[in-house]
Amino acid sequence: MLPADLTNPIYTDADKAREYLESVRWPEGPVCTACGVVGAATQLKGKSHRAGLYQCQECYQQFSVTVGTLYERSHIPLNKWLLATHLICSSKKGISAHQLMRNLGLGSYRTAWFMAHRIREGLAPAKGPIAPLGGEGKVLEADTTYIGGKERNKHKSKRNAKNIGGVGKMTVHALVERDGGVRSHHIATVNGKTLKKILDVHADRKSALMTDTAGGYIKVGKEFARHEMVDHGIEEYVRGDAHSNTAEGYFAILKRGVYGTFHHISEAHLHRYLAEFDFRYSNRIALGIDDAMRANKALKGIEGKRLTYRRPDKAPAAA
Image (cartoon, helix red, strand yellow):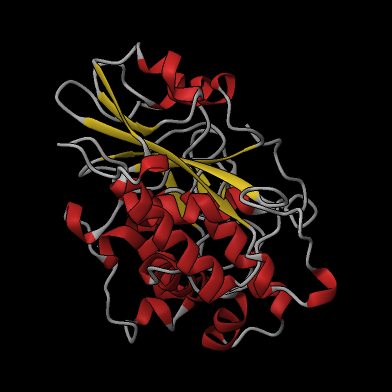
């Protein structure tokens, strides 16, 4: 478990940080990144070798604990990576790159910004099949919101009277399991095709589905064990157990982070911020996961991922 005490040596000493990361990644001994053999590597020592360098006795390849992770080839000390991961995982509404730069004593805003994006990449689910949310006896809520700010808060020269509702803003869809996790996505349009595509992958059809009266849910809702809709147009928000208040609660946390911490999120990076907020919400105190456990889980998410400086500006197409 990652200690919550920020004076712990793993946050101040690079060697202690490396030893801790080795215990997290390799609980049964070093794993060769070339051939995958476990426990058959020896640590190379001496002035000619850097600390933490291993050599596999099967394929004779050399490797370290950061090879094949988001930390690979980073010039930032490993203890600062662990501290940054802890700060991001323990900040309910996120932490800005400027604040991260000050807390870690980094040389530039750009370094802190890219570091934060690497960590967010680690918080995102690994590529490949993913278990759906919900199940028999469970309730899912689906809803959408808009990110982009209100026209009245913009400078007069930048206001557009036509930007009403979601016009000119980014649309975010969230699927929330009551007393469970959340999966949110940036989507281009709210229609049946888009919503079905998300629900097909992320929602167990044995669940009860709660939504508003958006037309895109009507057809796909018939595939679930039960589908209830509340009509916000007539100020109906709760009817028995039918409501989307849990999803609205998630959106409230997301927007507090956007408006209060980050102030602006570009469309190119929205998916990374959503991964961050999804991770914290799905691994929250109410589910028995404290800050230390959450950060420890985040360290395991760095495996098999790389993010180079030229790639962050490339955003995936909205669903």
